[in-house]
Image 1 (cartoon, rainbow, N blue to C red):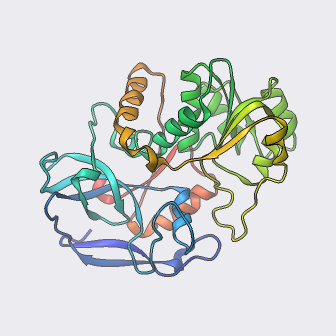
Image 2 (cartoon, helix red, strand yellow):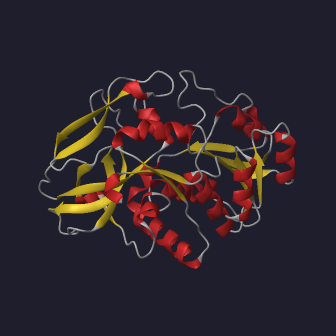
Length: 338
């Protein structure tokens, strides 16, 4: 890191299919300066999210499209270098919206102060930030699990899924995870307390699902979409709620695969509903406070997979995420963190 300059990753062109190195450009720009109410952050951790792919293309999205030539926006965690906001001082650790860069300027009203005595900085950008809040509001507001019900979570070993499953257990429901390896399935049961876990790549998938959900499924927290969701529809119980949190299997596809056996929704009197986490922004603080209490009690465990690298390594780390190489929240740890 050269003092006085700021390495940033920009979108060089719109990706076709999975994004590759040629779709991005690293630029070295002058150090930014904070204006009124703003804070200059030295970025230590960058959030790596599969949903980032959805706003690199032109088209409809719940977030503003990244324009060609713009710095790519992601969640960041880091240390305050300079503050023009009354709530933050030099040396504070914060988390909030930012970009793939070494230094960023963010308005203080968008930042959260991180108490690293409660949890490490990585958890503040992981389970206590957007991925954890997505699990919290999606499950509790839409899924509304009741004690004794069965909640099935896809991509259950990922950042959102592992939190959703643990919250289901906290609320007295059965948690059944779906993951891509036997090792991940054992992790869900042995480390996180899931009641059962199923490997979706197994030839015996539907039989395994039947065994894991003998009373069918009351809530599906879906992060994957595609053919897997079609299979899960066959296990719906009467009055089931399907939460559309994401569709990682489809983000790189030009043609989106939708459910084909959607008549199961009518047969089982089920409801399928999507949501956007930003709709709950005025409740983030209260939700995070409750999750911190679960952490303190040991009812909630958070895991991060940190990869060391420079801003230009972000596309490769994202590729690893799509390959299923992570357990928990994947983060790119920049040199300033060391």
